[in-house]
Length: 366
Image 1 (cartoon, rainbow, N blue to C red):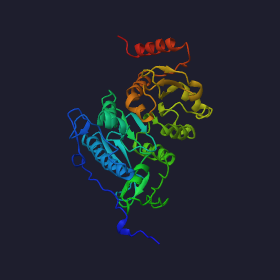
Image 2: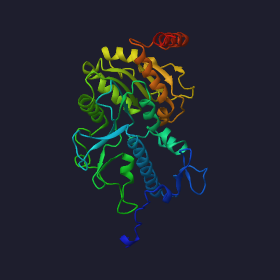
Image 3: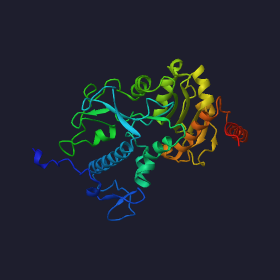
Image 4: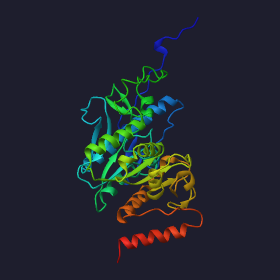
């Protein structure tokens, strides 16, 4: 009989949480490139061993998360708010970002990302290929704060909903899979649905509801006007939260923009007043190879006007590509009281453009 001694089992891999030690540096263009080869982007496949690759990527991503957070908090625009409200770290909590003017702003923009993404990150792909600022919420936040009325900001966190007790922090499913193990061949730690969860934020749906019902209600002005961005499955959570509580949020939420793939159920938004609002003051930015902002068919499926996000098959690239258009849509509705979207169907694009131009000229006469 043969038996395997523990001494023969390979230990788990470990990489330093340090960009330079990992062989990378940030150049003058805010790009992350190899120290040895300044043209080379992050290399995931450093080995044929999948576990080694995953652990290396998590060390790299941890470095970037720290950089993004440092830049955001050092600008004094955002602060970290632990949920549930009143929690004092290191008690189990889910961190979100809220702007320092949240209590006083008259307009508020809420961003609900995807359920697998890290807080403050739009697309790891964009961070690795382009810049840290464009692949994260950094450029987005700075643009919002440059608006004349300086809207407040809430960046929700439906991705980091697992509480890692050993590190006393909330993590995504991807990070959970990369956490240290006894051996390289050991399975991931089992998730305890009590100890590894945070009260009131067990799921993306619970988290989004908590942001609206607790954070907005208790931290923002009662008369604040709200614009909402929902990305990927975060878009569905936005729809679910609002349509089931529309009596509460009607009159407060003034616009919604969603970034999504062309997969949507016709009855997603339900019936009644919310459906009417959805058709009048919401837009969907969809994966498409058409140029950004090109009107697309799809109102029947989405219940609102649809536009190209200017991206191909990768859903996470929608936000880096389309957030400026989303903010422009919000600004239009803010500048033009009573604005309602015309239905975009084949043959109506020219009419839509004329209507929009007329509304903008009326709001900003020479």
